[in-house]
Image (cartoon, rainbow, N blue to C red; front, top):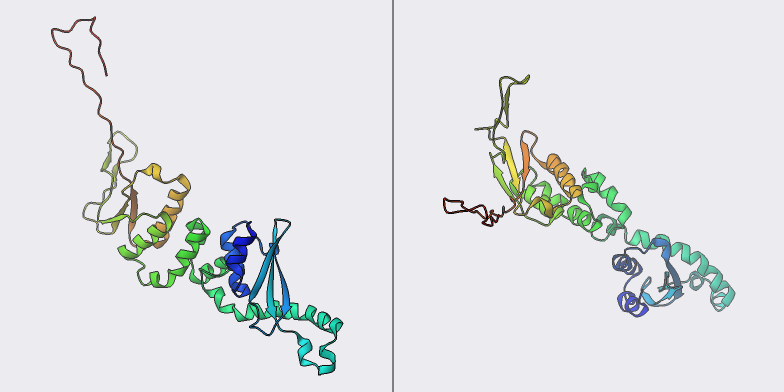
Length: 265
């Protein structure tokens, strides 16, 4: 961690915003790694005035605060011991006040603490485990309510898939990306597979990239997401861009060829 960079980032912000900024810059930073020291000031409360790094592991933030000693008669206000003693209780009060002042930030997916994302997702009936990284989870929850208006439509499904994969797919209605497969009469099971001709309750999500572009975990989460977001009365298929097959070099053997000739493939 760079002390100069942290100071440039945090000084002047309120404590809640400064802590969120640190968490976004240093993903391995935990709540216990940030310590706060309040300093009495007539300036607006909870503004970061300075910061430093302790043992290259923890960050100390210095913030403005009021002191309860100022509410006592004037002959007590100059008592240094009493001032420092009451500041202990002011620390506890400040922690509660910061949470109350910023309670609205809990309902903003791009700003709330990481452990509160699951609460928001449960309220909205969303399985955030399907979305992968924390950044994608926040983005998905940020647009969850507007996207609810598009649920069940091709546009809504494209947006969902784009947030998850970063690729806008093509949605082809009434199309199955596989050929019909007939089971022969000499087998135990008779019938057709993918016999969906003329059936409008099927669609295909086609990606303009090869399957190797996605890892197996992403494909699994994509399948679960499509199963969750597609209309109930439809079947959904996924297809990818076909690999380019390199044509083989052809060699023609005619009547003039001999066994001593070199045949290349």
